[in-house]
Length: 468
Image 1 (cartoon, rainbow, N blue to C red):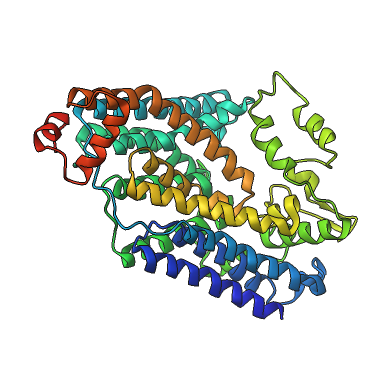
Image 2: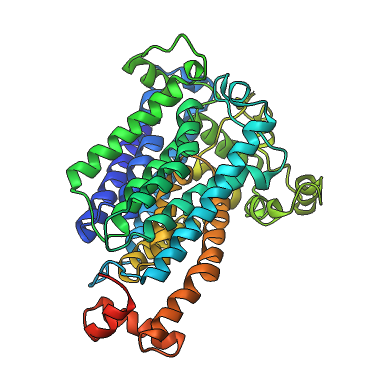
């Protein structure tokens, strides 16, 4: 029965991804990103990890039927939720902002990108320089402040705002130079540190963002091949992580066998094994956190550690839970007799189970709907919603491969900062140019732009608002 459920999970993941594309004819529909990655975690990994039966020394096989059933239902809810948002009948034309708005978009993008680059430079400097920071496997700069560490990721909304400044026309040489300069630190970190998350984020932002702001899409075959190549690249990075660093002299290609060995390693460090163990442990103990960890890792996490040094311990004690760190949650010695490897992740669905039991399926359905809703607004309204769509696509690797709060906190952080900069630097300028074009109120400005995008606004006003 377990094997049947594993294959059923693959059918649901790929099937809903195909339905998402068939309904939308859009290779950037969230189902096409979430479905294959969920299939990797909950179909390919268990298929390989259980092939020799060694894993049953860590996981009781009798419990794995209901665990895999939950995985199947979770995949169906998350991917199915993206379809519930529906498919719009019309799509927005490429946004044609005025020259002044383009300048503000470029300035906003450069500002956020500069903050991210500065954070990268600071962390490398206090770590002793490039050689000290990246002269070891999975290296990188370090900082005691979480705000500095997370500021590095502002490179992503910065890149997207620069791409939005080129909406409706070709990228200028200046914009290309800014994109290269701002993306370079994250590309370098992802490659030399063999970091899957940053590598995926910057590649998706540059490729998907380029097409999204122009309301264009690559051919399905090209997009499918690109996603496959990206998946292979991420697996090659992690399987060769021990050999990738500055000054390495033993880098050699290990071949496909090394990738399969990584995917199917039956150890406590495997995400599928760890996640399944957490679910079984929580079921035996009856200990669920009912969303407390999500609150702590988003709201409480935003409070500087210098202000409240024992923030995690105090709030965990207040909610009456054993802890919020994976080192605590990974101790399964009382029920299964082992503990997770340091640095392992339990993956999305197991994390939601630990928080909300079977009720977590409702959260997964809502999460999928949010992805679908943002996608729908991006193709019907454009502008700031396009930034939101690309941000969710770039973070889909965290959504599917790590815990929910790993994605949720970064969405709130990068999306929130991007929205604030948009409001302060872009929105007011946009409304001012609309007023100069003949609209006198923000609502009238919005109606004017919507009408112009549908091609029914007076051409004279459209020309005054900015170049086509």
